[in-house]
Length: 316
Image (tube, rainbow, N blue to C red; front, side, top):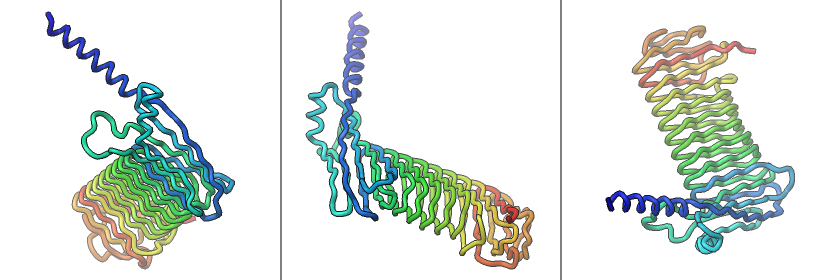
């Protein structure tokens, strides 16, 4: 019975090769830089995660964690020869980048053979520009602008008191608090935000959107989930919540004045507890438009596949 024996031997060889190929060796590179208030951090990596947290001093500390697919230290040394790792200061900017040479063309197994994670501590007034092709991005509480891009991970942001522009092609986006202009987008996940005090633009192609406290204008759209927003005060301008495949729910103070423009292709509109001068449609119908508490900015609500609920919140 030579065939089974050959298959078993081949399987053992493949298993041994896979185990060797998947072995990882880790190395760490650290650098620190003295910076002035208002510094800028730029980080870019292929396949790794990026974590940025605030510190009370005026130093930017960069820790690069290299995860090397190699079966020995000597092989790891050889692999690292093609890693282009840059950690340097340019004026009041700190740059940390990791890229691997010969990345073009077909490669067997995982690529690149070195994954570099960056863990960085910065003064709280630092602005950051972060990019990774396949990992998560985490940013703690900062007073500077945040720009974040990932092609295959999640984004989590703390309390950010400046402008935010964050997007991912394959994960969730979470924001604790934003007091500047907020722009969040994902092609395949949910978006959730706590307090949003500045103008906000939130978009996802495949998940839910939830905002716990809206204090400025907002435009939120999803192609495949629910949209829920709580307005923490009067509407500062026209706002829009829409979905192509779920429910829209807006919670507004019971004495807030605005103009409601709600329509659904696959459900009903309910605005119980609101004082509305109805201009079109009605309660329990597919459309409801009119002035609430004397009118004001427009609250536009749209869905193609669910109900619309406008809930009144007791004013303090």
